[in-house]
Every structure is written in C-alpha cells, then in structure tokens.
Image (cartoon, rainbow, N blue to C red; front, side, top):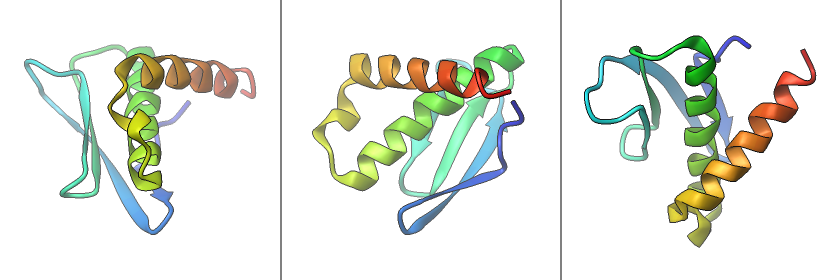
Length: 88
C-alpha cells in the first residue's frame, strides 16, 4: 500500500507526514489537520500506524467518545488494515 499524502475526512483535508520521533510511533494532530507517522519503522508498521491514526481522526470528526479508547481504535485499525491488504 502506498500511504496517501492526504485524506479527506468529513470537512477536513488531513495531511500525512513522516517525522523522526523518539517516544511515539504516530499521532493525530487535530490542531494542524495532520497525521504524523514515525520514519523509524518498517513500511508495514507505517501502514498500521496510518490506519490507527486515521481511525482516531474519523472518530474525532464524528464526535465519538471511542476516539479516546485505544483498545477499540487499535482493533478497528488492525481489521481495516487487514481488509485493505486483501484488496491488493
């Protein structure tokens, strides 16, 4: 999978960027409309992180309390990543 440079979520264009990070693998930057992914991981891990942070963004834009539930976000993102890989 090629991670897109941006994604549209409801009324926002979310930029996807890569950065050298020490403590985090990725995060959803709601203030700056970004998904930040660590450069220090494998391509497969970057895809996992992308779907994880995208799930956070979608739930955030929906106003869902699940946005803060890391167990739910991780499971949903893992299943989404699996489903998308099966379409390649």
